[in-house]
Length: 346
Ligand SMILES: Nc1nc(=O)c2c([nH]1)NC[C@@H]1CN(c3ccc(C(=O)N[C@@H](CCC(=O)O)C(=O)O)cc3)C=[N+]21
Ligand SMILES: [Mg+2]
Image (cartoon, rainbow, N blue to C red; front, side, top):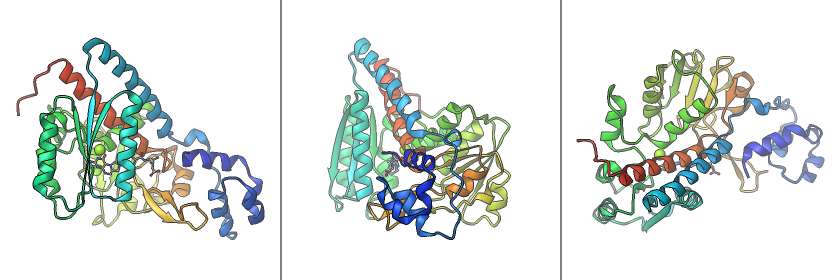
């Protein structure tokens, strides 16, 4: 059940907001009860659905497009795309993500292969697993779930993934090609690719616009900035050492927030009419929620939504797109294998 749907459902029912007793009678009290807990604060104006970028629905559309292509590929080449997912340790969030990735594979008709290793596995053992998947012709994509335990060098593991199977796009050769004009990476990292796909499917113009990327991680901020740049946006990156991040952000037509700090980007960071893509997924304590927390992004949603022309919710925004792009990358890799395309020289 997507949070965005709850938000919309709640927005349609104005009356229960004011009374905590009536809130208790509402079947899904998460949002309403949170509003009732602070009666002094005025309830935020409900966000009109036309402002929301429904990543969950767009990802579903993409997944059904992929399923159609997989069926055709099986027919034409007798080939089934295969994704290998390697999980080290037992972080609850990683286990959840890995489960959703395997489920998404099954839904579009991919084969998936999983290796679960204990948290204290040696780097050498993990390397052997990666190398076995590199050599396995049924596998077109390899994903080693991050973060890895401290004693393992992520660099060493990611560098070992064959670039033809690097569906995460984290290999330095793929990243390097992304950064260079006149070159194309074999794969683009899934989360930033999903952000661009959302902009494109919502018909948001990128060329000639000012974009602000908040955060400079290898997996989101940096590749997001490079992708925007490739589409002729004027990109500014801000980060924890930027003294005037709020001012710089407030000049942008497109904001991609990927700083990993819950609700850091406030409403007044957003230029009226800007498009806001929120990559963050943070757990925020909420005693009224079933699990004792709810998910929030890196953007303070209500304040930003009041000014933005379009905004992604969390969850139900970028998250589902990350998985859809992983499937797209894996499909593309399988297509190259089916056509026997030689790997570009490297
Ligand atoms: N090698 C590697 N590749 C990754 O792509 C990778 C990774 N490691 N480590 C962790 C991050 C995180 N990530 C997400 C994937 C899906 C959702 C997703 O589907 N989110 C849903 C559900 C959120 C929820 O309910 O928890 C949503 O936002 O609506 C979120 C986050 C991939 N990552
Ligand atoms: Mg990714």
